[in-house]
Length: 152
Image 1 (cartoon, rainbow, N blue to C red):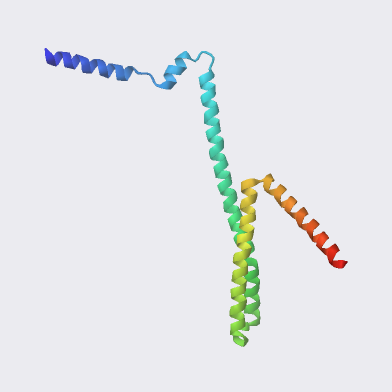
Image 2 (image 1 turned 180 degrees about the vertical axis):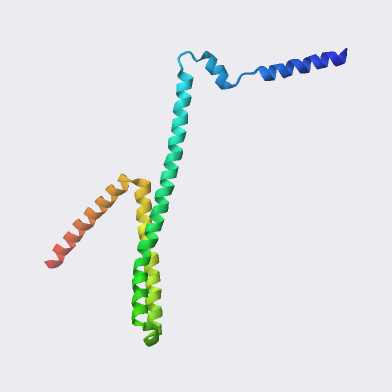
């Protein structure tokens, strides 16, 4: 008899667990106006747009990285071409090493500057453009005042 009562109670609990509706089913049953469905579609669209924006941003950063690398190595390639065409390592090996070291440092600095500008442009967009314009105007005004005062 005790086993039958326990079995009956466990069966009722199992039926209750299976009968519990999911939130979609529960709200869907009371969603006569379609507000829940519309809200869920909006949330799905926002999530999808957020993921697309992240992918676009990552693609732009990848392009900016490769463009900055290419621009950074242009001066180093020019130095290397001149070294190879004139064979300066035979006549002046220390000067050749110094030129290559300076070219490599310049390439790294140029890469860092370009990638920083590209990254700021991707990250801040029109706000960055406004900041650059304001800084450029201030630089020109201060430079003009300096030049005019120096002439006197």
